[in-house]
Length: 391
Ligand SMILES: Cc1ncc(COP(=O)(O)O)c(C=O)c1O
Figure 1 (tube, rainbow, N blue to C red):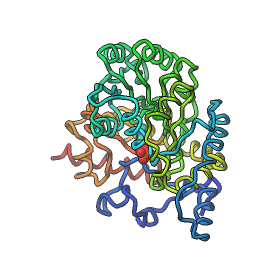
Figure 2 (spheres, rainbow, N blue to C red):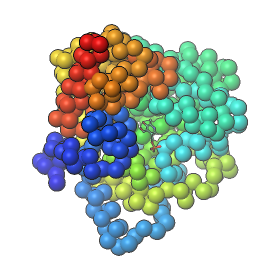
Figure 3 (cartoon, rainbow, N blue to C red):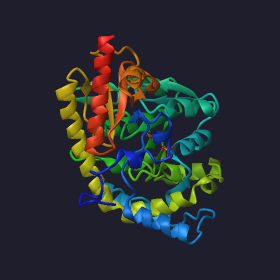
Figure 4 (cartoon, helix red, strand yellow):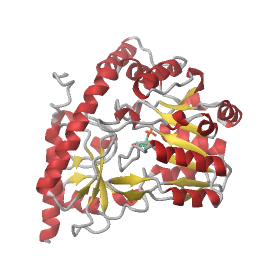
C-alpha cells in the first residue's frame, strides 16, 4: 500500500470514492471534494496495525485512556520541546466537544467569548450552543501574513470578555503565531483575567520554516489561566474515531477543572480513537515526517499552479496544515466563490462566508492529497473561473 515516500504520491480517486466519510459522501461523484479538513492519505502503519489488532481481538469495549497522558507528553517533548505533566492530560471525544465543556466549566451563561476571524466556523456556533456570546477580534494583516490584533483583543477583554478561543496554528490562514504575539496575548489575558483556550489540533503538521510554540509553554503566569486542546485527529486523519486531549499546565487551572468540568467527558471518547492516538503519538512520527514533507511539496505546488493558472488569486502559503485560504476578490466571483466553483467547476471548497468577518470573497482549499489530485482541483477551480467569466 505504501510507496517509498510513505504512500503519499499514489492516491487513486476510485479508491478514495469508496470512503464513506463526510468528505466523500457530501457531494455527488462528479464533484472533487477539497472542503472539510479530512486528508486523503492512507493510515499510518502503526495506527493501521493497532486498529486491525483490535478488530481481530473483538476489542470493541469501553475506552481506557490511562496511558494517553504519558504517550502525549513524550510526543510533546520530542516535537515541540514542551514539557507536559501526564497527569494534567484528560481525554475528550473531540476538540469541539472539549471546547463546549470547557466553556461551560470556565464561564457563565451570557459571557462573551472572543474569536479571531476569519476562523474555523464552529468557533462561532459552539459558544452559542452553550449560551455564550461571541465577540470578534479579527486578525490583522501585517507584512506577509496575518497577525493577532492586540488592540482589538485588548478592547474585547476590557469590555468584559471572559474567554478567548485561540486557534493556533490558525485555521484557515495557516498562521503559527509568534512568541511576541503570544506573550502579548498572555499579558492581556492576565491583566483582564481572561481564560485562553488554545486549540492546537493542527500543530503536529507545522511545516518547514515555522515553529509551533505551545501556548502552555509560555510560562507559569500564562498557564494559570489557559487550557490547550490537542489531538492526533487532524495530522493522522482519524477524526471519525473520536479522541482529543485537554491539557493544563498549572495547579490553578487543574483545580478549576477538577471542580467544574463534567466527569463524563472521559467516557465519551472513542475506544478506537484512544488506540489510534496512542499509536500516532507513540509510534507515528516517521509517518508524520513524511506527511510534512508531502504537505510542504503540495504547498509549493499549489503556489506554482496558482501563479500559472490563476495569478489573480491571492494565496499566503500556510505555515502549518493542509488548508489554503484563497483570496478571489480580484475575480468576478462575488461574496461566495465556493458556491460558483461548485456549480461551474465541480470542485467543492469551503465557503469563506462561514469563517466570519474577512471571509467574503474567499474560499478554503484542502491540499491534503496527492500532487495529481491537487493539480486536478486547481484545474477545476480554473475551469470554474473561466466558466463564470464566460457567463
Ligand atoms: C481548528 C480546528 N479545531 C477543531 C477541529 C475539529 O476537531 P474535532 O473533530 O476534534 O472536533 C478542526 C477541524 O478541522 C479545526 O480545524
